[in-house]
Amino acid sequence: MFLRLVADSFRRRPRHKLLTGAALALGMAVATAALSVSLDVGDRLSHEFRSLGANLLVTPQADTLPLEIGGIDYRPVNAGAYLPESDLPKIKTVFWHNNIIAFTPTIEVPIIVGNPASVPEIASSIPTTGVRLIGTWAHHEVPLPDGSIYVTGVEKTNPWWHVRGRWFEDKSTECVVGITLAKRLKLSVGDTLMIVERVHGGLESSSQLAVVGLLETGGTEDDRIVAPLAIAQTLSGKQGQYRNLYVSALTKPEDDFARRSPAAMTPDELERWSCSPYVSSIAYSIKQVLPGSDVRVIRRVAEGEGRILTRVRTLLWLVTFAALLAAALAVGASSAASVIERRTEIGLMKALGAGSGMVGILLAAEQLLLAVAGGAAGYALGIVLARLVGEKIFGVAPQPSILVLVVIVGLAAAVTIAGSAIPLRRAARYEPAPILRGE
Image 1 (cartoon, rainbow, N blue to C red):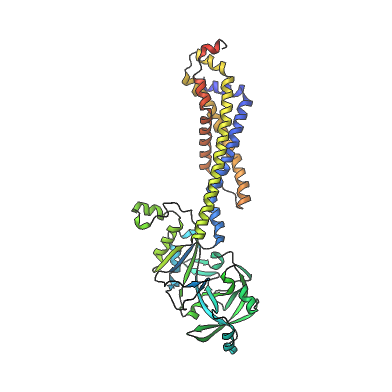
Image 2: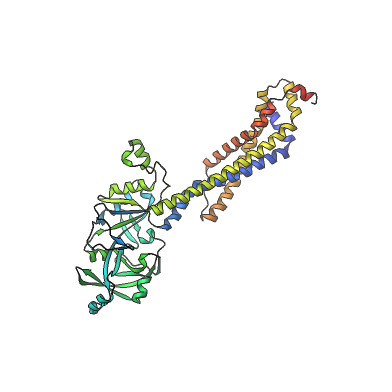
């Protein structure tokens, strides 16, 4: 009998039920799209943010105090400590190794450039600050402990660096020259460059470098020469070592828990912190496998990522809340109109012995059936909307999720009950006698 009464209500008021279901479906569609994009937005934005460059900097722990003015390091070439290049494969053995998408070691060396036959004249024509050569990897193959090969380099850690021509080969005597320096020295792609190192006030010539590209970064690198790391190691006498290491890692925004010191955490808290891809926890893991290193977070990159991601997610949650509120109001208005329209029917049911609880359960069951149907329809519509939004903004559509379907149907039920609560309570309190008398 109960199911018959519910089914009869749907047959006698199809238009009314359809409008209520449509309101629920539209609200749930917006909520589905927002939730689907929100669950996927973290990974998508993290990949997009990698175009901002590395977010971790590894330096020797025993390094001397840097002396930089205007972005130029005035320390002697051999000042400070260095780290062994042979330890770098260990980075891909940490817990979050899949989140580390690139790393690049560097050494910067002051040199003089020109023709060895006229070195004295070159020395007098070059400013006292000299020219600086940055040794690094372009696309270097790193053999990992598991036997696989990992390809990394400055192309991945600094993707915004633009090269006219091409990058050098890591095992070659090639280089790229910053556009500012190239203009000053009247160099172009295809030219040959002789580099001469300053050593204790004297001059020591080195091999020639073929210019294969002109580098444009918008920073101090525009006035630098960038060459294979091995060349810079030879010039500085630091074979098999590096000065700085830039690491690009996929992370999640830091919260108050992430900013706590690992030393002050309990074992359970440390395990939870280590198992979260915070930039600080990844830095901590890297420090464990690189003895004598100091791993620092490049805050301007990491904090910028966190702020943007937090704001995007906040916006999506606000859109979801607005959609749920609109759906609740629509359901409430529809439910109130239905209760008023069925006032006589409710009075007759009570006169025949139905209690207030039974009446409330009957009306709530009708609304929950609408919630399930509207939630399922809204989920299907929301997936289409999420694909459109995902492809338009991120270039990749989020994948459908059973979890989102369950959440949406649950939200539809909660919204329906919340919106119908006041009308259902009023219907349960109706007295049959006044209604049957027509009052």
